[in-house]
Amino acid sequence: MASPQLIPSHSSFNHRASINPNSSNPSLSSPNLKPISKPSSLLQWRKFQRFTSLRCSASSFPEKHRMNSAKSDDVVELPLFPLPLVLFPGAVLPLQIFEFRYRIMMHTLLHTDLRFGVIYSDAETGISGVGCVGEIVRHERLADDRFFLICKGQERFHITDLVRTKPYIVAEVDWLEDRPSVDDEDLEGLANEVESCMKDVIRLSNRLNGKLEKEVKDLRKNHFPTPFSFFVGSTFEGAPREQQALLELECTAARLKREKETLRNTLNYLSAASALKDVFPSSRRWV
Image (cartoon, rainbow, N blue to C red; front, side, top):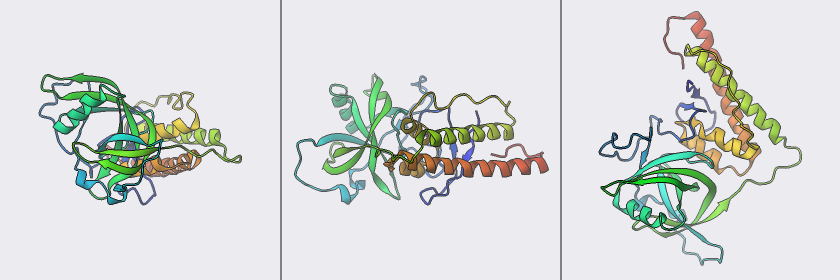
């Protein structure tokens, strides 16, 4: 299935991205974001089509989180992985761990609760204040003590304080949940509109790329509006700042409306590209 460019209109988005409803993994396909470090060999792990290498600097942690407030009885401490991508609840993320301090973290996690915080970070904005818990659902330890993981996004969290930065970052967090919808918000209707827009984008993109026009399958898969809104956000590949903005929203209706606007903008772009293709049919690729 083709991956059409997304055209968000929000200020958090400053380059073109793509939508990939077949992928449950956040992407590093953005031209402005690159993996921070590369493994020595990609051929040693053929089970994963994509993975992300981990490296971060404690000095990059924003001062706004460096508070030393008194701990409450319900404080949760969470080890953090700052990455140039956004993990959503329900999404799957493959990772390779080879740096020493994160191998230490893995040894600890594999003997405890298997959960850590994935938090978006880039050179311009630093580390975000909201992230998503990643739970290790599968792992393999190699002879050189590197780890390959498959993680699944769980609940969102908000950083309230920094506990320590060495050997890896640990922060105090509280959990972030969407507010209950008001009576006049038709979440089911919004979710159905977003699904319809996604199907239209996929169909038009396939046509522009010369793909066979097939009926787009059910994208919601009986998901309730909130988890479906997270799924939609996870498909916005190559736009991590837009994805981060979606992750931070505490209102399902607001998230769905923003996604619908992005999809409609993308559909308008594809419609214009389709019209140009009809006039100049010799061009090989339009999206």
